[in-house]
Image (tube, rainbow over all chains, first blue to last red):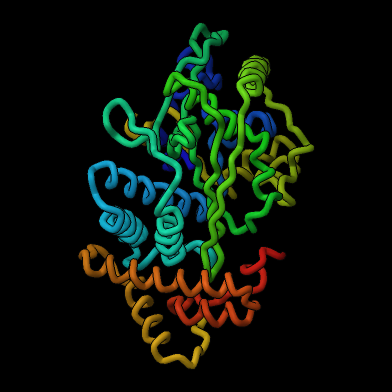
Length: 323
Length: 84
């Protein structure tokens, strides 16, 4: 999910996450940008720096955005004093309204698994599943619930341009479990919710970023991330919860690794060349969306990108929440 | 996709009602929202009961199709057990 702006190339806004001094040098990083750079420098160049994206509708992304926002409406209504049923209604009204396609005058269709009906069903069943939630939403200093919290702070590392690197992004929900601080992250998937599903997050960059950021935002140690997973079937939505611990020493290691990664990126910027990482061309048994591009001779790639992809700006400095 | 016949007039009536709900455009009044929520709650209770009973795929399919609106009633063994 992310701060994405998609327009005609000539109308694309300036990406404020990049250096004002050195072209193509990203200064403000979110977990998506970091993950892209870790995965493959060329993937990072194409998807983040140049902003190419496939033309097909991003159904998973849209579904996730509405599911998160619906859940956010529920917690905000509760924080404003609403009872469970009233807050539940507020959440459902939001997703029902948002998933009506005004331009086409019909419900958002999505696909067989993710569509208007399964969106509303999943949100409603999720709220039922966790009606008596042992996780307590953190209340921020401004009195609002810590849901969809946007953050940005300096990383304590200076770029060659003289600008300070920043870490930014959005935290789904900050919670307490037995008085300890965790990030609660909502994921939707078509996969079964077994140990294999949760294992993908054990050393996941996004979860480390969130744990690190939550500790900085609240100035107290964050224990890790609690994954709230929703399995979306055609005829059902099933839920699971899994705790991912992040020991402080692991977060130190993540932070150190990030600074090395940023230094590597400066080398790529200096050479205006982001090398391919061929071992990442297949992930989870699926080809990288740019495999068809990287498989062509360099001189013809731009032409194929223009034919098969559209440009958008991925600007992690766009604020989404209330902080 | 078409609704699977359930042989249960009440369930079919509920499905028709939900189907009608989900083709509606905003704005939604409180009664409509509450109606949808109640139908979804009934649907969840049936699903949970079917799952708790260790329902076979065909039985769970019938349970799901008795509650889901038209066009989304299909359920497969893959859906049930996550097998590909």
